[in-house]
Length: 320
Image 1: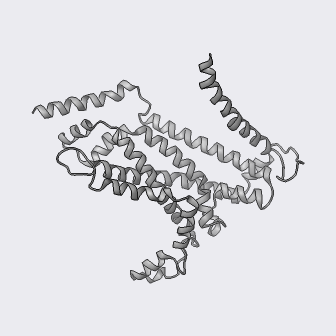
Image 2: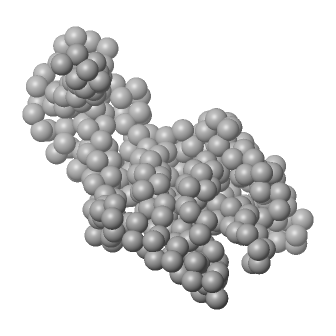
Image 3: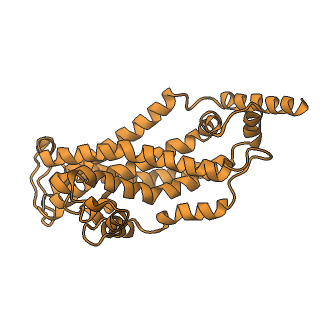
């Protein structure tokens, strides 16, 4: 009994106190007109939620975060997987399976952007994108592309969101590359050796062996990246605090922040926070569902079967 109280009761109590109760309070305040700096408030029911979905600015922010959640995790994880495969498996095609020469150096370089705080990354890239003195325009102009002499990357509706996405991806790809490197190192080497004997190339090996073997890591990474993309407050606030041209980069968290602290409509802002939390939960549920529908969550015996067949194939190939 003491064991269950210590290892189940205490964590459950912490979860209830610091997660469920605050979320319940948020739902309550979302149904009020509380202004944040006064004990007075009126209960307004679902008026804040009705007002929210009639708010064109909020709907634009919702579309923007949906766009971020669709592209940022996909591109980031694709690049991270490519880096991880190159570092761990991109070595010579003959002899033992190993990574490229200088793998440790590339691992450090790829991880470096993640070490820098997100606010610093955002401020650095805001200066890089500066239309008058930015390094990006200077490089492009030096290459003979004069049309970028004073091009405002964060001031044009067509380029503002892609520019923000690039910075978020640049800042996060290294961490997930290191995560995938650790996961790939846990895959039995004989699987890759058997695939090499069968004549499989690096791309085929990645799709048929590496991805299925690290599926759980990819799923977890996708959820975390989706949550980061749905928020993305720090990066966007550092680069385009005003929401960008025609609110093209505005996120829900930015809209929430402005409504709460600039307009002092904390009840309305809390309703936005509740919606953002629900959207995040739906995103996570969709990732789990897609993973399940595409073969994830199978029994351990099914997962071991391909490995057993690969080992037998490797043994037979070695005997021949």
